[in-house]
Image 1 (tube, rainbow, N blue to C red):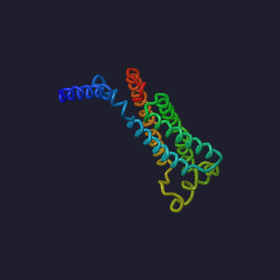
Image 2: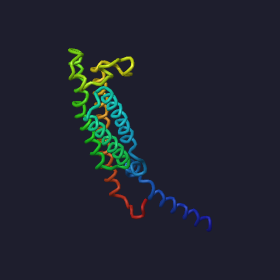
Image 3: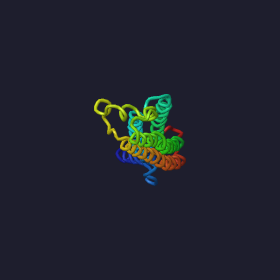
Image 4: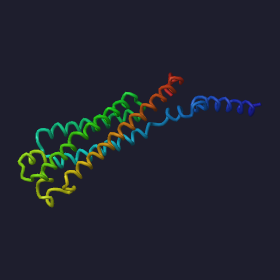
Length: 201
C-alpha cells in the first residue's frame, strides 16, 4: 500500500513538473522563453565590427579637420546605441529591434559621405597632385610619402570601395538583426501572453 501511494505521488509530481516546464503545444515558444536571441546579437556585433573598420579607413584617408570631431562623435554614437540595442534585442526587445533597423539606415547614408568624398578628391588629386584644395581634404596617407605614412593601399578609390563594402555589410547586418529581432520579439510576446508568469517562472 505504501509503495502504491509513492508511485501515485511520483506520477503527480512528474505530470505537474511537465505541465510547468515543458509546453508540448508550443515548442518554439518554449525555446524562446528559455533561450536568448543569439542570432540577432551575433549579427549586431558583426555589424559593429564592420562599422569600426569602415570608420578607420575613412579617418585614415581624409585630412583631420573640424569635421573629424563630428565624424568621430557620430561613430561613437553608433557604437554605443548599437551595442546597447544588440544587448536589448538579445532579450527580445521589439523597440530596440527597430533601433537596429534605424542604425542600418544611417549606415546606408554614411556610404554617401566619407567614401564619396574620398573618391571625389582622389580624382582631383590624380588630375593635379599640386592642387592646394586637395590637401584640405585628403590626408598624408594619400598625398604624402606612401612608404612611411600608410599601411593601406594608397589608391583612394580602393580605400573608398573598401569603406563602401564594409558600410554595406554593416547596414545589412544591422537591418537583418533588427528584422529577426522584431519577428522573434512578436513570437515571444505572443507566447508569453498565454503563460502564467505570476510566480516569476
